[in-house]
Image 1: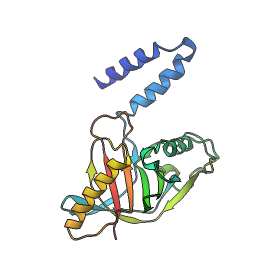
Image 2: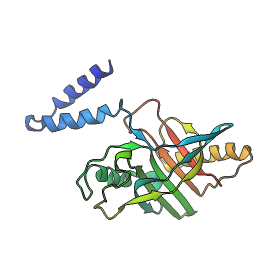
Image 3: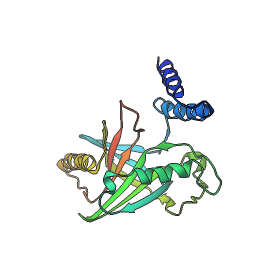
Image 4: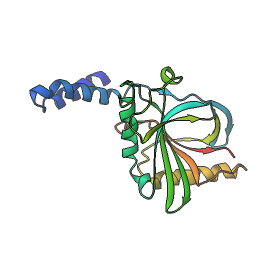
Length: 212
């Protein structure tokens, strides 16, 4: 049934295009809708402890492709950072290489003050390119060697569309963690998403707190 629905959507959308653009449009829509059903390579980790309402994970050292912005309003409009990284994996690199999309998309958030916030968004680099990833040609994109880290987190569903959503979950999770006798910082965390915007069900979002 899913396959029939995908085909029906593609045929309907393609019929609205001019004849000389149908093939390219059809391919783009197929790839987009296909993302509703396919799975992506995920950054590896090990759950080392389950606590009431959250878990502790250990992430090994890995390379990530990253970009950053600072200032007010960035947390409500992270699209420009995402598209820089998306262009990198789609060939905007020194090899013109296409790199598979992976999960999660993580954004490290550091809050110095209400007016001084830094956001570093990263795509995990798939295992096939880990040892020698293509170098970005966009100077605002860089390869980060992320060191081993232990994180405290839980998974929540729905859409996290803005900074208020992320900070609400951060506050709730921090309360759970602190209620268990551990401490975390609300001025340094990661906002982490696993799903494309057009996935409407079984969504996965996480706030990661580095373990103190």
